Image 1 (cartoon, rainbow, N blue to C red):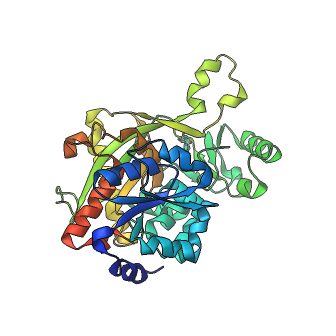
Image 2: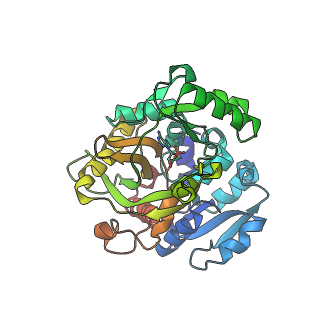
Image 3: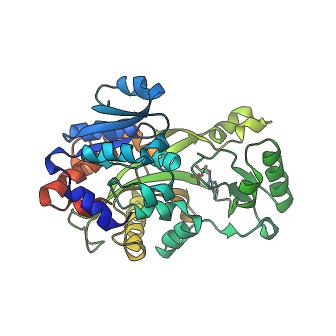
Length: 366
Ligand code: AMP
């Protein structure tokens, strides 16, 4: 979908009755809750079995459900029409991309999205992601083209948003090959996944996940020519491997699992904040060069910090992340920007309000 096609849809919308919609998964409760706080009506795209769950949180329940058999049904023309008739702007999140597919969204989903639709393709492609982040002057883990080049401890991952399932670390080329074969044999991955696995340098240190928001409407604070980068929160993902110490001294194999199951709030040593803000600004600045107008709205840098090496970014999420679900009432950082409860979901709705008030909604929607 071209920007012009989406602009035409927005032109036809009743600007006094814009609704915020998303797929009922991931961070949808927070998105609906925030939209309601900013006075928007909401639409939840939901499978039948989940409706009860979303009704269980009255302040975050969507005003209207669009019930589907499966989430990818929203690609059907009649479903898209339903959303356009209701002046819907969709807020994309991780599960939205996973269930509908970045390519399908780019090519055949003719409903406006909050943010810049082009970023979805940039976060989904490992090579493009590296071009973006390293091009911004930020360190990423070294990547090995294939197992034969491995000369240090490595971390192996598979593509697609699978939440860390099947990922592992290996100490040598032989160890790597053995573990890959084991995973294929037990059906955790298929041979294609094994062939396309990303083999990265294992980065030791503490993980921090920074939740940022970029708004083109706010006054710059001397970093960017236009707009402001806000730090809305920090979290750390909870993975089974974090509890491996409980199995000491002989850690059972089941502890070596990186599947994300939850999130913990964290704050970071204040003297590291300049680096944190600097990374957010550089990522936005580089995005503007690569895919103008670049990053809009929420994004996350997933990092490892070590006192000797500083920050290494191993992943960027160019949309709202589930770790922000911690902060429906705001975070220690967002409180100092807004002085009122400001979740990422609410921040998105607030940004839409700003765009509507100044007649610049098109700038933050594609
Ligand atoms: P990801 O899907 O890239 O977010 O990675 C899932 C998890 O794998 C992270 O939360 C980390 O625990 C771990 N991880 C990813 N990349 C690396 C790396 N290069 N070195 C060490 N651990 C990593």
